[in-house]
Amino acid sequence: MENEKREKFIVPIGPQHPALKEPGHFEFTVDGETVTGATVRLGYVHRGIEKATEDRNWTQNLYLLERICGICSHSHAMAYSLGVEKLAGVTVPPRAQAIRQVVAEMERIHSHLLWLGVAAHEAGFDTLFMFSWRDRETIMDILEGLTGNRVNYSVNVLGGVKVDIDAERADSIRKGLDLLEERTRHYLKVVTTDETFLRRTRGVGFTTTEQAEALGLVGPTARAANVARDVRVDVPYVAYAEFPVTMTLDTGGDLEARFVVRIKELFESYRVIRLILDKLPAGDLTMRMPRRIKEGETVSRIEAPRGELFYFIKSGGGEKPERIKVRTPSINNFALVTGTAVGHQLADMPMILAGMDPCFSCNDR
Amino acid sequence: MTITLGEKWNEALEQVKLWARINSPWAIHFNSGSCNGCDIEILATVTPRYDLERFGVKLQGSPRHADILICTGPVTLQARDRLKRVYEQMPDPKFVVAVGSCAISGGAFQGCYGVVGHIDQVIPVDAYIPGCPPRPEAIIDGVVKLLGSLKKGPEEQRSGGEEVK
Ligand code: SF4
Image 1 (cartoon, rainbow over the protein chains, first blue to last red):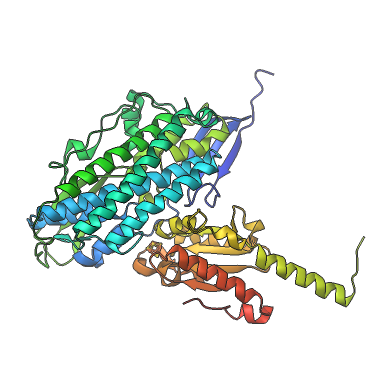
Image 2 (spheres, rainbow over the protein chains, first blue to last red):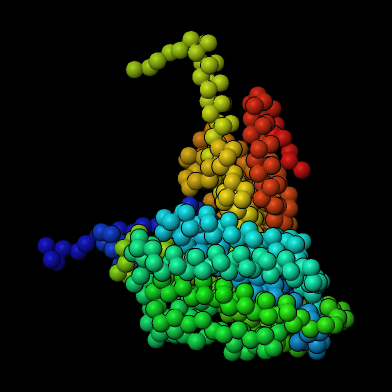
């Protein structure tokens, strides 16, 4: 019996799958209920956006790139604008930079709350899903009031921003944040004390700091394994130098730690938004941008809600870019799923996958 | 054993089916290349603020249980055949709702090499909900209008249903 070669049984998941809102395909080799291997196949939502940027002009690209991802749209637009502004040698007024940061942090809040709900749903904890999405509407209302749209906000223009925050708006934002802060405290309590929920998260999908570094994880997923990696702190962009955030780290390395890190980051976002609202620099919102961008190439890095977002932009001196390359956080983090799946129960797979907060649409472009 | 029903019975049965379908349609969501924006808004419609379930609409996973296919995004090369397959797996009668500018016309992604077109170039669409992304209210309105159109006869439904524009 010992020598008898067990047949491999493969469980395919996706591309159309109820647990994932986006198409991705996974194959888990299982022995009984235990996973012995995992592969991932991506690219179902590949549209070819990078290539398409080459026949649109600099301004049109802002709106196209924003639509790489509906969840972190502002991050994409901001990374692109920062890069193009660097190439053109334009300095953006401090007020615009601060507003960019405010919206970026709001986006983080909405993204993390969204993730909290989806991840809770994977664990079968639908009450938390409904609660966190109900509270997420608060930040959606703030974003809509500020920018006019719930999802693709188009706050950035090349050379600045197109929305302003006045005293009245600031007050309504503060009010919303107070409510959210109170709710977030409750969520932190839930994910760290709810016994049933902890059974699904504690010790699941564990990575050591060394493993996390070797896999090249980024964002909250890496910070949950105590890897100090946050672009906002390492190389501050927009107004992060004047309004710094502190990095949230956790030594846990498991799913619970990923919940805790993301929820703690929310508090950091609330704090820094309030700080900016109190000390919003005065001045213009936009600078004039040239139609043609000087020849040259540059990289721009920012911290999207899921981790480091990287843009490479090359200009040939014309009205259109010569090449734009985007590297999104999810591609790094997929290594976590394939790397830690082995040895877990099949039922844990959706949780491990949700724990890294995958974004297929960013990833495939 | 086969049961043969009289004319009247069949008619009554059809009415019951229609009543059930209108009061509790099950929907499946398929993303054929969208940017996520539309998808999160669809998800938002089932959460407490908007609560699509009060109309009896339930979002669930398998195409074989679904009456309504909610599509988002342009159709990518990779997703085209899968979209067709999901559509074919659904039992008749089936209805398709295209959510978002991309699903209607390709939107911002027109001309990308990975995009083969929009939803109604691949499968027939019954209702269109424009916006980038449409607000959850708009999505609910679209679905409810579609349900309203189900009350009409099957011939009228197939001729494109009621366009929600
Ligand atoms: S319509 Fe807009 S939000 Fe919806 S998938 Fe297309 S780009 Fe994204």
